[in-house]
Length: 311
Image: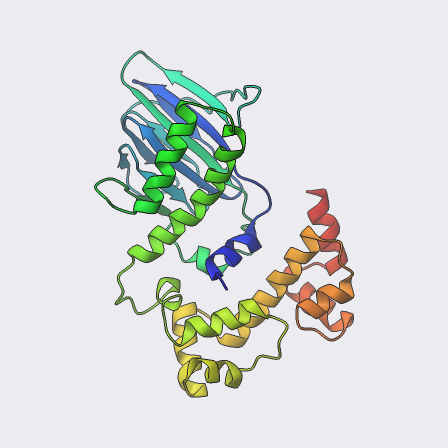
């Protein structure tokens, strides 16, 4: 079971939206917060990402060709040719017929910077802890042989945007969608192997990773701390301590979280009867399931489904 893919899939509420931004110095663009996670890919030239006044703990970041930025919470920020360039508010986007992305052009007559900017529509009301543990801003540099798969995806995106050809309408959205997995995989794999805590360590841990895979593979199974500890090859107490340290919550708490996440996704994306959803979430009765679901989400399953469909 690919836990990273499953975790992201559980949070997705739609396809990513994206805009190609071309700025000629001097240029500055103020981008408002987005409902999800934001991203930027520098295709050509250089620029700066400048945090807004409400984030004094963050510093401006210089960006070069091939650099990738992932904003975990879709925080508002400024993109500019220089940190001191005054920004304009977000400009009107243009979507050309036959183009999979919009375009924005702004600035003067100086050096050109081209970026792919956008956001992934992720439900941030109950973010998966794997995503919640990420830094607010992930900055990955793909030059000099670093993160070769991510670099290849960036190069493919750049080529398709510079020279659209037959098939580009299908290729570009797929590459943008895949970019999120490449970004997060590159970040997790770049973490020090000696890290004692967090999901980067949990996904590589010989005891915890099999237990997580079992929960994700069959959330409806009658898992217990003992049965998961058996898979991990540890005593009940040792497994529980290790799991809690790495994942950030006890095994049964995570199991309940994933069962409810599975149920919420079924309610959003399918017309399965509540009895089926309850069974897939490991509950033998609709009543018990509805009670547990309302405790987690604040809504009965039927109301949650109606609200999700109306959004």
